[in-house]
Length: 476
Image (tube, rainbow, N blue to C red; front, side):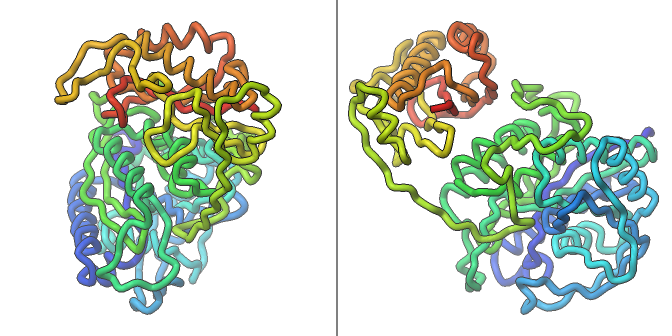
C-alpha cells in the first residue's frame, strides 16, 4: 500500500491522566479514552506516529525531533508535584529528515534536532506513554511555532503529507492540544476541576459535534468565529486543527469518534479520532485561500500581533470595555462619536442575550449574529421554521435572508458605516441542503458587487425559530 496520512488523533497533553487519573473522575475517563484510542491506533498498523504538539514551542521556524532513541526523566514545569516521568522512546529519524526536506521545499524554515538531552515536551511525553507505551510504533515530533499564522500552519500540514508519500509510510497524525485552553492559575482540589467558563464549554461542545460528524475542515474554518466569541487573544487551540486538516485532507469526509471529553485543570480535554472516509457531509464553502507554498504572514485572525503569543494552555486576562447604549440614531457623525466601544440601537431587533448589536475595535466593526426578526415585533418574514409546539413549519428562506440583510444595513448605518463597507461574513444555515440555493441568490443581489469574503456553515439550530443568521465584520 502506498504511503500517506491514514488517520488523525486529537489528544490532551497535561500529565494528570497519565500520572494521577484516580484523583478525578474526568481524568480517569480521559485515561480510559487514551487506552481505547490506542487500540484503534494499533489496529490501523501505522509505520509512524507523527505528533504536532502545541506544548513544544519554537520561535524561528519548525523543529523536528530526529534522535533515534531519546532517553530522559521528564518533570512537568507546572505540575512537578505529580512526580517524574522517565521515558525511552523510539523515533523514526528517516521520516524526520524527509519531513524537514518537504517543509523546506514548501518555503518553510525547518530543521531537525538530534542530541542527547534535548527536552521533549510534556504533551508529547504523555501522548507517547499512553498511545504507544511499549514503542509499538516509532514516532516523529514537530514543534508549533508560536508566531506562525494559518497559512504557515496549513503549509506545514501539507509538508507532513508530502513526507508520508515520499517515504511510502503509513502515518497517523496526532495533535496534542486542548480545545479551550484556559488553565486555572491557582492549584485546585482535583475534585473541583471544571471547564473554565460556560462559553468555553459551549464552543468545545460545538467543535466536538462537528468532529464527531467528520467535519474537520469546518472546525478549522470556524476558528475566527470562536476566536471572537471567547475573546482570547491567541490562536493556539486552532493551529492543531489547521495542521491536522491540511495533513489529512482539507475536507469533511471523515469518520469521527469522540472517545470522551472532560475538564482538565480548567481546560477542555478530549480524545478524538478521525479517519478519511468515502462518504461524509462533503465540502462546504470555504473562504480561505488554499496555500501551497508559504509566502509570509497573512494575519488571518487579525489583530496587531497576528495571533498567539503563548505555546500552550495558559491564563488569559479578560478586559471588558465600557458599553455605550445608543438609541435611534440620525446623524452618522453622532453615531461615530459614540462608537468608542460597543453599541446597540432600537432600530434593530433586540438582542436575545447579554450582548450588544456591534462593537468597534480599532479600524473594524464587529456585528453580533443577526437574524431576520423584525424590530419591535420579533415577527419573522417568511415565517418561523417551527411552531410553538416544536413542529416543523414551511418557510421562505429568501424572505428571511432579505430581512437579515436589512437588519444588517440598519445596524451598520446606525454606526456610521454601510453595507458597501462589509469585508467578511459568516452565515449559519439550519438546513444547508434545503436553503443554500435560495439564500445564495438573495445574498448575491446585495453582496456580489461588494465581494466580501464569506463562510457558510450548517448548524443544528439557532436560538429563535429562524433558518438563517449572519455574522458580519465591516469597516467603520
